[in-house]
Length: 453
Ligand SMILES: [Cu+2]
Image 1 (cartoon, rainbow, N blue to C red):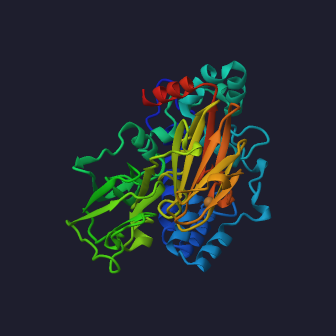
Image 2 (image 1 turned 120 degrees about the vertical axis):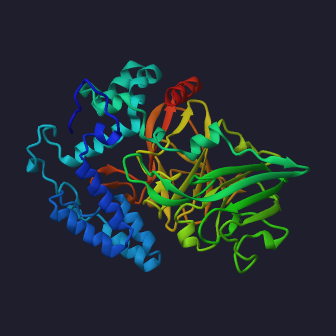
Image 3 (image 1 turned 90 degrees about the vertical axis):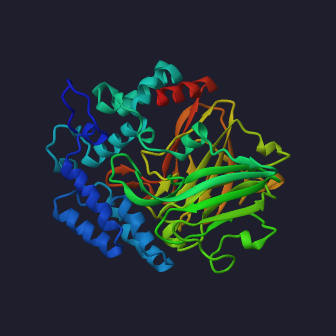
């Protein structure tokens, strides 16, 4: 990888990583071709190979995810999976000797360099803060793994996930606050066409959002609250909004066009009113032209806090993990690695992770180093039937709540275990995240300060 001249700071992550315009264009082309479906993927791979790219056995993430999304039937998804499945020969078909590039360390391939560089982007300037958090020994080892002595440009840049809007951060920094009207909590939400940056280095994709973001802002109330959600449709097409998991008294509030309502069109608003009668991790999403509308981003979390929290409802931090596998490939909260926000927790704390699957595929999310105590399914508490797991498969429409109680520091991978959803020719992508366990809670404050600075 090229290192920019020392006298100037790279203006973009792409530039910093030494990616040329042609390389970026190739990625853009891969994405554009991928969304046209399987034929597009095949053509893409062929074109890619013809262009002299490494002969990897499957294309980068956006192709795979978008391909499956373009043909969501089980058969098509299966064939998409098959078409992207790494063959036994997938590994190091890029021979170390294939390149004379002096920037490739001995024994490495271009893949290894790309795989390292994507993690450099993920960690960004947090790498320089690790010593103050983990101490010199651990930080030294982490720094050695990343190669910080190379003084690479990302060391002075914010992590990739700070460079794009994030529902996780927005929920913390600017939570959606209701107005009150008597006993009602009133939420006003617009439905808009947006451009979504899956990753700041990739071309944005045409998306749909609630309040101009995807996932939409988390709607949060208490058990028993009366909820009035007023949606204004700024799209060029009609829509309907379903609160997924609510046990409605009035079924006409269920949000399914032509079953419980007429869709509401461009410029129109629709008001949903209901009582949040059951607590838990719920969702809201389009229920009209939904393969397209939800796929392109009309989705969000709806959290109803219990009036009487159980022991499992006591946690120090929480993290909404909303997965999608249509728009822009495999994403967590609208972004693919390295633009995914890490789960942060300090030793002695418990973090609640709320998995919500708004996509069309199953994803077995696997936590390294820590068991997850599975405490609720679809918002319904498991109580005495809570159980431990290190991999939990979250199907479309499902929500699983887990608690992770931290007792050891570490930087732990946390990812979907369908490998083509997470790793490809350019290293890790898509549904990859990490669990950062830091020694003390003030370390998390320090990290957040650094990120926001
Ligand atoms: Cu997956």
